[in-house]
Every structure is written in C-alpha cells, then in structure tokens.
Length: 433
Image 1 (tube, rainbow, N blue to C red):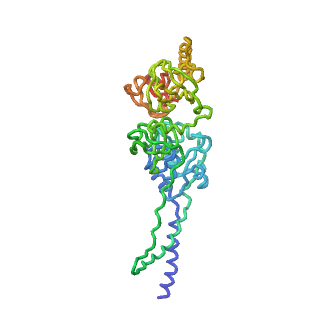
Image 2: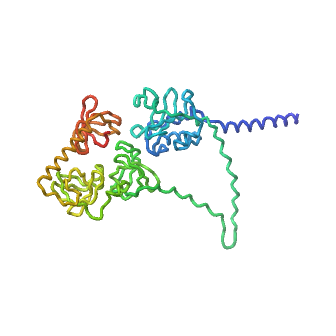
Image 3: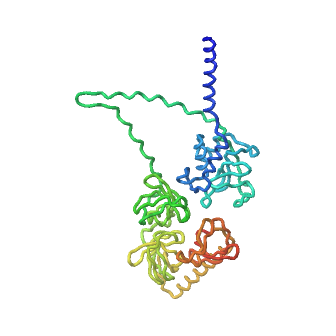
C-alpha cells in the first residue's frame, strides 16, 4: 500500500507543476484587450501621450492597453508592427492591432485596436480623442480608413514568458556592536529623476497659466502654474505650445502665456536676423496698429501706434517687422500697415505719393486675400463664432472641427464664414483651412 501511494505521488506532482507552468505562459484573450480599450473611449488625444493622465497618442493608446494586460507592445509604430506576425484582413479577430498609412505623414502613421464587425477603437486626433470608428460608412470619416489600411498583427496571441523569479535577497548583516559605535549596512541611494528634455527654454509670463490636456480653450484644465515657472517648449500647434515643466510633467499652454522667451523656438532665417545696424525709418499707415511681443497675431500686445508715427525698423521676419518706437520700446508689427519705404535704408517716406502707393498696395493685398479665401474651406478645431470680428464681440455659437464653410470676407485676423443653412459669423482666421 505504501508503494502504491508513493507511485501515485510521483505521477501527480509533475502533472500539477506542468499545469501551473502552462497557465503562466498562456496568452491573453482578444476579448480582454477589447474590454480594456473601451474603458478609455472619450479620453483626450495628445501628441506623445501614453497614459490616462496625459491623454493618448495613437500608438501610446495601443501600447498602454496591451501593457495593462501584461503584453509589452512597444510604443513606437515600427516596433509595434514588428512585435507579432502579420494577420490577413479576412482573418481579423477582436483585439488585433490595425495599422494605417499616409494619414498624418507618408508611410506608416496610425494604429488602432480591432473590435470586430469592421469597427475599431483608436486615439484619432485632437478634436476627437479616443473614439470608435468603422472601415466603411463611418458617420464622420466615411470610407477614409479603408483606403488607408496597411495591415494588422495579433500581439495578444503571442505567449509572453513569465519573468524569471528574482534572486533571493542576501541576508542582512546584523549590526556590529562595539563600545564606541554601531555599524549598519548603508541604504541604497534614491534613483535620480529623469532628465528634462532638450528644447527651447521659456518662463511663464502671466500670474496663473492654465495647463490643458489638448490645445483648445475647451479642453480640461490639468492644473495652474505660477508666474516665473521655467518650461521647455517641445512642440507648437497653432497658438498653443506643448511644454515640459520642472516636475517632468507635460501639458498644453497658450503661446501668449510664456511671453518673449517662447520666441526662441521660432526658426528665423539667418538673412532676417538682427542686423548690425537698423534697416531704416518707416511710418504707420493706419491708426491703432498693435505692437506684439513677437511675430504672431496670437502673441501678447505691448501697445499700439497711430497713423504717421515714425518707427525704426530693426529686423524683418516673414510678413512682420521688429520696430523701435521713439520711447525706446520695441515690438513686432504687421508689415502690410507700414509705409512702402520701411526697412530699405532710405529713411522715412516724405513724398505725397507714398500714402497713395501704400493704400493701393494694402487694398490689392486685401483683395487677393479675399479671393484666396472665397473657395470652400474647413474649420480645423472647435472655435467660437462671433457676430463681428473681435474677441469681445457677442458669441453666436460654437463650430466644431471639421465643419465645412464658405469664406465670404476677411478682416485682419478674422474671417466671415457661411455655414450650411445660410448662417454666417466671424471666426479667427487661423482656424480656417
């Protein structure tokens, strides 16, 4: 009887150990991947986000979902595509990773997680975030994704080996007592925090600057940073900057909030950099010309100058001029509203014909801009519609990104647009493409 029990134990114990090892190496199901992915529908899109706290990029979303299920899918598109063998389109199963080409840039440029039935979940873009889309007859994208489909793979079917057991911790030596002192083993030093990323440095120039999840005034506010906080400017999107803070966190801030220091990120051609001596005298052709802290309609306004006021041109960049006023104050103004002699080193224009030439030139440019904007256009992000040009004008409503409009007129940095149904209003021109 004892021999029989011993034999049975030798047979059963190996079987139990093999069964536990097989369970540890078992692959995650595609259904578990789908359930995890759908929890984050509605979360924000960010350029380099890879967690719910920062928002998600397309590959950051896929990588996060898989890592939450114990599968280390790389957080770069090329690495993710080569992580598992390819799967044919006809064999797609829920949880598979889809890849798309020629969306944001040429070649491999987007990824998603397949849900089944021709539907998938992905971090699409700023104005949408994490959404569910379809290959065909999508209510927003129609058949766009089918025409950009590149391939798929199945990381959830890749058996991930269980990590090796950590080595046994060495026994802690007991304190050595003596008549004078007690010697104990030293504590390991705390790991150093990750370094700040490379990029132009700037400082917050306002009392309190909102840090948002995405580049929009309608995006949720993560926190508030105080005046003087140092930041690293990593990316620019319209009138917004993607920055890193001293505590290594990231967020979107309005470009105007980081003041003149933020101008370091502008790549100015060598031929337009500040000359050894001024370029010449000029004067303004309009009243109330705004002077900005840097070349951009969205930058903070320093002051304004009146018609005929003489200005010293120090530098040119694109359609902007860096000027100095009689008081010694400096700033950037739009070159179209300066007299025709500006920056040519000939002094101010004194002939009677100069104002007429400047007026003709401005009228011609305005007509050209109106003609260029008369064709069909599209609003690129959520934007407020005003009753007249100006941020202080009454708001008629909100136009969502992707809305098709027809531009009727242009006034400065504003465009008068017509929506479907013949409604009209004024929107900021930079948000119309």
